[in-house]
Structure formats: structure tokens, C-alpha cells
Image 1 (cartoon, one colour):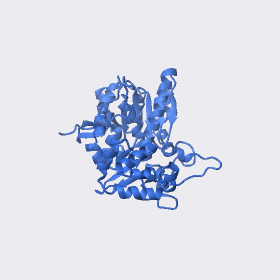
Image 2 (cartoon, helix red, strand yellow):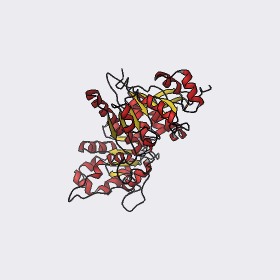
Image 3 (cartoon, one colour):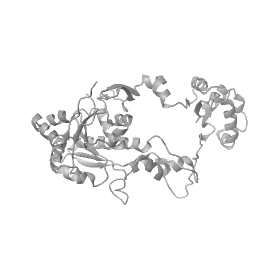
Image 4 (cartoon, helix red, strand yellow):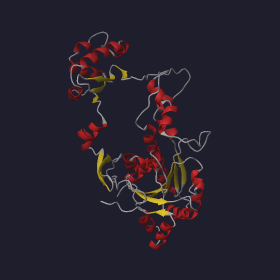
Length: 395
């Protein structure tokens, strides 16, 4: 049995962050039902992105703009333990799917909300996306450096942290409900995600001297916490936080004389002569291919990693293959798909990628039959365009 088996979730999320909350719940056994409009979640435009955050879910299409269709959604929610949404404040209320409306007929519902800016404050109704929070939270300028051009992060930093915060909140609310029977409203936001990822930078106290280490071409924070290039053009990141690492590094590089050189013999001396040490290490690393250095350093216990790309990690990394970082599943439209594995491993209640991301309206009939509608009623709903059932994929 999986940790969240027999827990049902009504998923009204769109795009990445909100949908990712429900992915985490589905991976641990929850029956997540993704409810979409007839034109679908706009994230469907990016097939890989959609599959990544909507795997394990069943897909239903209900046109919430129509009053009769809302009654169908309410009947479905009445069978659920949670509702998850990430709309701007006021939108779910207009659709009759807000917490205050739902708790009237489902008092113990857990309602998980992840609006971009949260539901309060002057910016609450602004639309918000990951790059906007990268910019406004200091993530871009922190990487670019004071007075320099901000640096855009291709990785959706805040959209990936949001699901962790949302799933954490949902799990704690469920824990409380199982103890007390109490439902509640739980909220986090992309703004909180942006702050969480930089929690150390948001500390402030009287007399604090803040360091700004970013710059557009930054390769690290010091000579022993830095990227170095091999003669083949490949890159290697080296991090030596302990004296033992420093000594082993010098041994591998044939630079043992540096361990007794007054400029580098102590951490304080190395900090003072950091530029000189960086120049020496750059010259030495450039004599050999980066991957060769990585192997030699690993043998001596020096923390180092090759600067590889996603393709190398997906195809060639033996540790990732051996530890279940990736899984492979069969998708009805895209065929064999490799995707991220389960994030948390449980000895007694292991998670499982239950199914691929649903086709638009793939499970509408199946779910409506489960909650008590007859096939004749469902056919009538389809004829009235209250709901949509996807056509089977032609193989």
C-alpha cells in the first residue's frame, strides 16, 4: 500500500507549479483527478513539461463556465479529500469552486491554494510566472552581480520549489485531518518559493555586512570552490571545504609543494592569495581532460563533479540509473518516455508512477461513472458540451 492510497484529490491546477503539487501526491498513491476546461491546461503546449507534472493523474474535462457543469464538479469534489488550485484570487469564486463554497457541502475538505503572489496584499491579483519572481526576488540580480546585467535562470527555480511547499502543506493538513477530522484552507505561493530558495539571503540584523558575490561570468566563490576547464574543453567543479580535501587535491595535481607554501598553507592564507591559487589551478587543470581529472579526484575522495549536460546525465550516469532517479513508462501518444522517478523513498509504503499524463478528457466517463452518474446521463452531458470525453488514441 502506498502512503496516500485511498486519498482522492480534485486538481484544478494549471501550468507547472500547481500541477507539480498534485504530481507529488499522485506519486505517493493519491487518486488525483485533473479537471480541465475544453481547451485544456495551457501547459499542454509543451508536451514534455506537461507529462512531467501531470503523470499519475486521471483527466476529466468539465466546462465550469456552465452552471449545470458546476453541479457535476461539486458532486465529484464531494468524493474528494482535497482540492488543489493555483488560480489568481477571485477566479475560483467566480466558478463556484472556492473554499467558502465547497466547505458548505464538504466541511472536512482540505483546500490547497498556490496563487502566484498569495491571496492578500496589493499584488494579490497580479499574474505571476517563474521568470517574474526570478527578477523581483533578487535571483537574477544576485547571479549577475551589483550594477551588472541580471542573469536569467533557464531552470524554473520557483516553479519547482512551489510543488514542494504545496505538497508539504497538503501532507501536514492531511495528517491533522486524520487526527481531528478537521478540514482547512492551506496557502503558499511562488513568492514564498522565491524567498525559500534564498532563505539565507533574507536574514537581516543591525550591523550585518551583506556580501554580493555574483557576476555574469562567475565560476565559483573561491579557488577551492570553483569550475575549472580541462584541455578537452570540458568542465569540472571542485569543492574542497576541508584541509584534507585540499591536501588530496594537491596530491592528485602534483602540487604537494603548495601545502607548505606560506601563501597557501592555511585557510586564511589561501583566502588572502585566492587569485594566485586560482591561476595555478586553472593552468594545472588545463593539462588534462576534465573527465580524467574527475576520476582521479574521486579516487582520492576530493569532492568534484564533471560539468555535464542533461543528455549525459540522462543517458550515461550510472548512479542515476542504479538509484531510480529516472523511470520509463509507455505513453499512448508519445510512446516510450523516460521521466523523473519518485522523489521520496519509503521502506514500507513506496511510491509509484501510476500512469502517464492524461490525454485531454481521457478519463471523464470513467470518473463520472464512479461518482454515480449513469452512462445515459454522461452521454447527455457530452451532447450538451458540459463535459468532454477524449477519443481513443489511434495506434
